[in-house]
Image 1 (cartoon, rainbow over the protein chains, first blue to last red):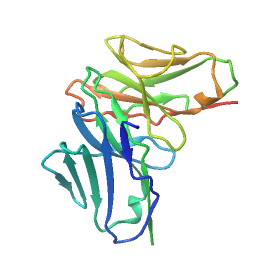
Image 2 (cartoon, rainbow over the protein chains, first blue to last red):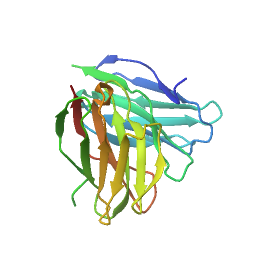
Image 3 (cartoon, each protein chain N blue to C red):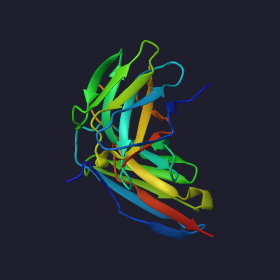
Image 4 (cartoon, each protein chain N blue to C red):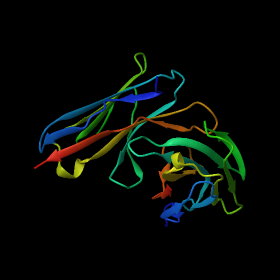
Length: 111
Length: 113
């Protein structure tokens, strides 16, 4: 079983749609949680951190459920520029706080 | 303020050869992590360097080694290259204020023929 599992995708949605990504993680000792965005052939960039209380950044809302080890990302009013691969990421409890990535979910927003 | 830089951007090698990849962290960052991203997969942690020493290592063989210099820049060395080593190699820079954000460089795309 992978440490971080995501919806396999790909997701193809029309502009203006709402899309949700889900992710589960296996290590209950994980300390921090993130969503990264990766454009084609580019490096991953932090989209947002995820907190137990849930957090929102404009059209993006992230939720964390530690009890069920589940992370989600909701994108409202999708834009063409949202097309990318979304990576669910957890940070370990060791001194290096290494990042463990899911395989990513590809999103294409269609005009 | 320059971000994380990596060199070279692309590299083609043949099986059995050795390769060295380089990374310069963001100004003020003292910790560097290396990741390997195979096509269609998320990045996988190789190791992290702090204070010129390897602090933690992922599940990679000893063919993968590294170094950190006093100016915090880092090298990743891979010996006896295999076809399966073809991937995007990413360097992440971490500041002294904590680990909430790791800044990634543009990566080096390695192709092993």
